[in-house]
Picture 1 (tube, each protein chain N blue to C red):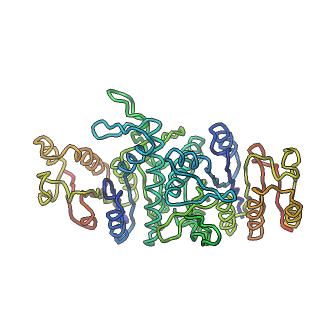
Picture 2: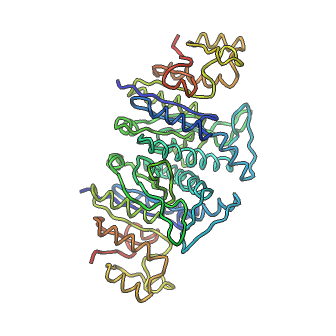
Picture 3: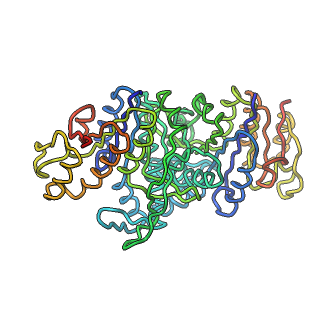
Length: 256
Length: 256
């Protein structure tokens, strides 16, 4: 099996011109087949504000009403995605920017309302990468925006970490997949205040122990849940790191 | 050679929910391989207004400064494009939404400033449809937004009629291409005020005569220039029609 590296970038990394340029330079230098998944929450919040729309968050998750869905469709699917694609093309990377609706590669259902109505937020139900695989094998680099669709004409906002994990699982049918979560911190930290306390490797049992002890920061938990889910479903390796660690470094997640 | 139909829709057709739905229904029923090209000027103008940006037009062409480029990238590349893709997927059309930066399928240069500075507007310099052809042959339907790039990281606003004509020329290397311009009027009219005065067929000599006599409406001239350019460069047939005429009808443009 050929190796495929899926890099997810989010947070400030992708939304500040300098760090984005640094990231894309390093991403361009990664050898072999690759996929980029991006977020864009800060830009969406800024655009919503310019449009006079209020951003509502519950536990760090965006409430996506009709107005906010328009904003994220524009910002994630258009502004952020197409600028990354254009910049990668300038670095001789043959990129293609996609949402889950494109090629129907990722289908979701609107999250059922329980305690909270998240609005037009999608929970992934199926991934079809057959056509994407053809492009990837020709050296094309998909750039995936955090949007899915329900196959009934409705676009849905979907967490970018989840998109990355689900795409990684989908591609693992055809490739030996390494999933890299790239964010501000150098890895999973034993002490959230000390960037030198990177945990070199972590298995699911270790993660659960750190979660119980409260050592792992709340925002990291869904990322790790996504990661271990991916590993349990065929993804070869998951790493959590920052831009300088893109090639190697950070925290490597392992099966038990 | 297999037949490929490229349909360009613009104006109100694509921006009002009812007419868009009607169009997509009819487009879905077109047999064989196909491509959809869309505009979105009214939505861009409306979004610019919401953001407090002034829309400047010269001879019906948009001046695209940095702020307006962000708007068209969001609206054309995100909002309009991805909603069309999601709706086509609901009609079991395996659509993929693209700008010229995606797969580097259409490269342009920023229009040189002569009398007027159009800003970030692109004049097409090259079309590469090799990867798109692979997808089209598998039944995938590209949905093309009116954006190109300069291969140096800059996205550019490009007239959708031109995108359609250039894509048609590019694909004519591999397919027998029919290009259909679909807009509000039933065809090229001999009398702009009389929708029943559709000219059934028109060659370049006839077009020039009507242009000289002033019978052809100013806004129609670039569309016809694009059309005859496409015919002279290998496109088999061009039709100008409205939604009910999508399958057949309207004005057929012919070589001399």
